[in-house]
Image 1: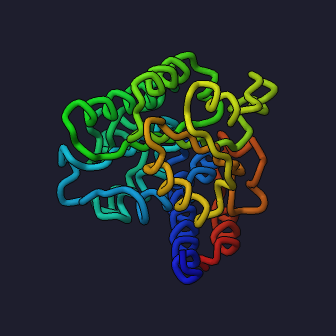
Image 2: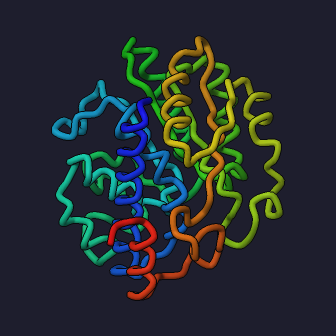
Image 3: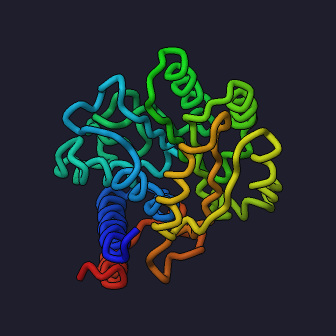
Length: 274
């Protein structure tokens, strides 16, 4: 990628982080830091990889993106609004009673949201089903699923991993947002995950490990994932919870904490938005 393209995507990622901070501050919802860790993954996917048309959100031939870590839905909503799937005004009603954008996605809550996610471990099995359907129907759409590292504690993730490898679902890619935290502690202390790349490889996947905040590396890995015949791809994206704001980074208090007005302003200044 050209340096100018990388800089432009980094600016978009900063804007998305700022929008998520505003949404969480206004609504009092949780999971701010988890949303911020996966922003670069979503920006790389939605601005450079996915073949999607916002005017035809239900096109049967569209690429699929499933945010399996539904608790980070604020990040997905911000990106979808920016890409034109629905009005940006909807973001102002995030996580309020009766509004379409629930704190965790509901079925069919908004154009571009593929699946109700919240209970962990469901996104990858559904994604594998979509990928298998594409192969059976001889369609060329790709399926991309973003899971959290804590989600890899779920048995359904590994059942889907075995299934995808057995069916040679080369049109399926999973990105693990590996921010090293779960709600109550370090991921490796709650349940030993490492060596995570080797685990995916042992399940028959092409597995790579990258810096999950390196936009160019993300685009390159996602692009290459389409080129490995006969295997699904797992991208272990090393990320930082609360990425982009120094007083939030790697501080698990921001899993549930809501920023105050002064903190919102300070965060936006760090992000270069003020």
